Amino acid sequence: MPKCSIVIDLGFGDAGKGLTTDFLASQQPEESLVVRFSGGHQVGHTVATENLEHTFSNFGSGTLQGVPTYYSAHTTLFPPAILQEGNYLKAYHPKLYLHPLAMVTTVYDIAYNRALEKQQGHGSCGLGFGATIARNREEVYFYANDLQFKWVIEQRLQSIQKYYQNKIAQESKAVQEYYTNELKQYEEAFFVETCLKMQSFYTIAKLADLASSFQHFIFEGSQGILLDTQHGFYPHTTWSATTSKNAIQLIEKELNDTQISIYYVTRCYQTRHGNGPMSDTPEVTLINNENEANVTNEFQGKFRTKTLDPDLLNYALSCDQIHHQNLAITKNLMITCLDQLPDFSVENLLQKIPISFSKIYASYGPSSQTIQLIKSTN
Image (cartoon, rainbow, N blue to C red; front, side, top):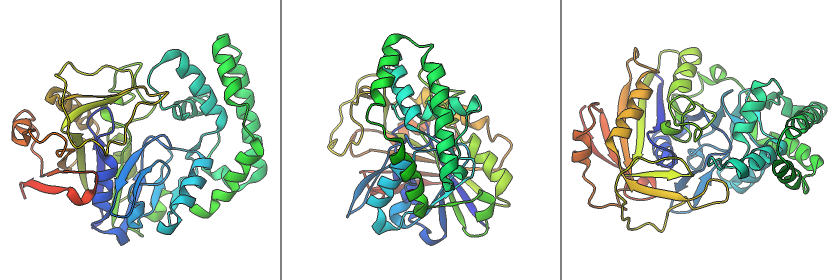
């Protein structure tokens, strides 16, 4: 029977979803497909091997294992980045399957996102993800299916340019100036060219079309439940469902008779990238931190760490439970970065979490090879 593994971050992101996905992909690489069911090109999931450390944005975190990636209709794509990352990873034969209604991000979306973020300071990545979702909700579309047709691409871009001209006219002078400056170096012909050139990396398909071709579907989540559009804390939220909600809906609609497991991921300490609130726990002193991939950047702001808060973990778990409470699902826990906090007690944490996990894993470094099974009820 085929199986589905759903990787979900219990915090504000950056917990180790890439590490976990790579670990799961290594178990059956020839029979696996990574499924992106939330977020899009704005993610940064780091995978480390003996030969390469890479932060994935446009390809799934099973790519170094030779595992292809499927992008659902809930996700976004940015063609220039796909082309660039695909070429960089050519030795690993990166492969994408794109739902025909996966949403395409343009430079106009990115410019508008950055112009607003400079004024609002909500902690956006500045890569146009939220702007793309908002534009589609206003029925100004650009889909993966369109990428096969040059004239259609050009018409989509004209429509989106006009859409933002109308929106930007209603904004402050500072936003207008920033938007204009972001587009100064933009060449639309180059963007169209990347849309056409990236065709070598993808096939248009629905998940149901691939159901018989794979035995293990690894649903790689984005960001974290505490940033979820429903369950996060406005205005520091994402325009996406970061719980298992979308994954469960895809499984029920397009994959039949599968075993479902969820791998909940948390670092052994609390993290937050951006300006949003963190729970009031003590500061934490980390060691062995030279491999940290998250750094302060212009749009997200400072990367912060604190002691882990079991109450927030329980809140996140309760939110996710809402979306699959009537299903038979195996729940597992992945605790990452234990090499950075050697005094952390897994047993003390488990005493504060009422959920019984089937398996509990721990990682002791940036590579999935450091992952150990530390407890099993099977």
